[in-house]
Image (cartoon, rainbow, N blue to C red; front, side, top):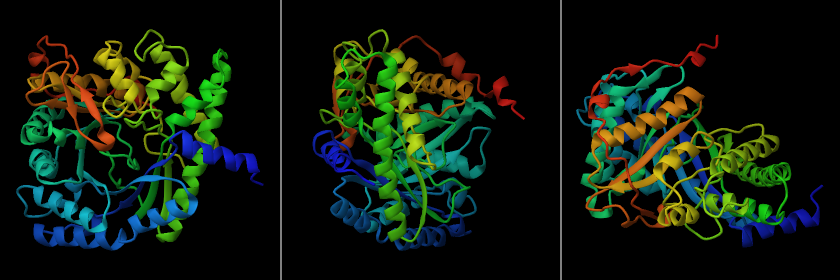
Length: 452
């Protein structure tokens, strides 16, 4: 039985602590849309998405109204386009991105993810065409998001792809220079990418997924911060238990919304992603949770330990609340999307190197990092390689979403708007790594990959 105090507590989470469902994401398989004709394939892609997701936005709005739970984004993820487009006669896959963009606009969703390729062990011709198409695709569309997986624990780290992605990111920034390199905010480079992630820009519909599915990403940094604030001076065992209880409540709300949406849309319920996803709004920051534990600023000594506690407690509490946990499920630390992270960078407490250390214990990686526009492709590739190595060795998902902002230097601020926020341009190590990146090949899988 649900007690009156539990109802009131949930209302307070929504009204005062910024609790929301960050996204309802419909995953759609496009495997049956492949054709030897690019036009015919694109038409099938558009028709299938607009048919299956026709009522997605309306359903989300109805649930929000009836349940009183804010649902911030409505999104679609699709089968990696490199797999769908490979049998077509297209020499450039931008036409597929444009078909996705038209479908996203028709259905009214905020973003559509899946302009993606999986190249952790090597390329096919379709993978290569898709990756080369990314800069044009992201600069000519509004809602399309792209991702490339360049490493797994089982396969190792594809350094040829790492080198290429540095160049692709630079080209994407150049083509979207008028908006501060915004195209790069829609591009993620992964290691150990999950196939049921509802969050953008990295979402795609994996090949083991059903025909269509509803995945939900929750939020709630403000709820956790408020809970920790109510136990000043408590030891870390009490802090962990408090966070677990908060995560349990947040996750139950997420699963309620996910199951209701899947029922109304006549599709399968997939997973609840437990990730604490911050926003630029005050009171909705992961950095502020860490500071509530006793740190003067995020980035101070002890930050990585505090984040490890937070990430683990969120997972434990969420896993008790739902049997179908997936996606990324952890604590996001995107710089431009978190008011506390932005402040910590501006005051000098938080550096790129400290952020990299923090990614060893949380989801998902170096996220929404703005760097000077003259940062070299090789330097960007080196940052990607370092982050992917953390994921590969530790058998966890890591990623890089980095924006070399054209014309900007360290200390400048780039405005992206909306949930993407504003990013202070961060310092990057300038020592040369070109010879390292030019070696190419594949860094072998670690010994812990041999589990059979």
